[in-house]
Image 1 (cartoon, rainbow, N blue to C red):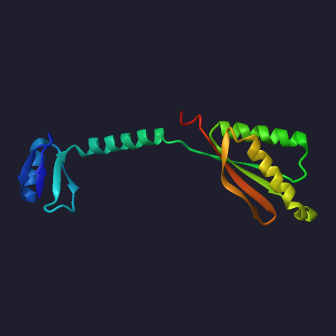
Image 2: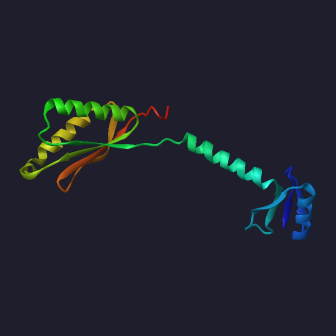
Image 3: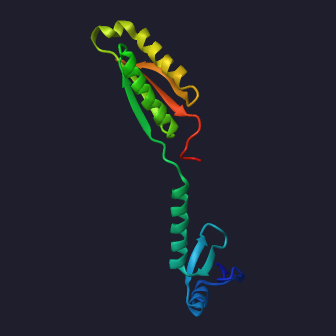
Length: 159
């Protein structure tokens, strides 16, 4: 096996027993870093410290990632103007916070005959929030509801 000392210098190709003795002389562990190489590459290092540094790097990477939540706003085709404005305000706040918004317009009973009103309602929302978000999934009919997904243009969480 090819052996590398703690300073990163190559000690050449040595048998396993000799590599273990050298690691014992340094008071460190013998760690196989490239098992598929020909010959396999082993390094003399403090394995506990190595694992600790790997976990620290992983933790730092997790800190930098952003989590995007999907909020949902439900409407009806006959939603009154004031209620519509309240729901629109919530949608704008969600998009401003960097969250995606799933907007659903549900139909009950005979309302199924007026799906065009629901589609018009969703298009109105798109027009109202075009400065904060864009349509990620176009409005489509799913059973007794029309759904669409809005995504934020620029997120506060990423800045």
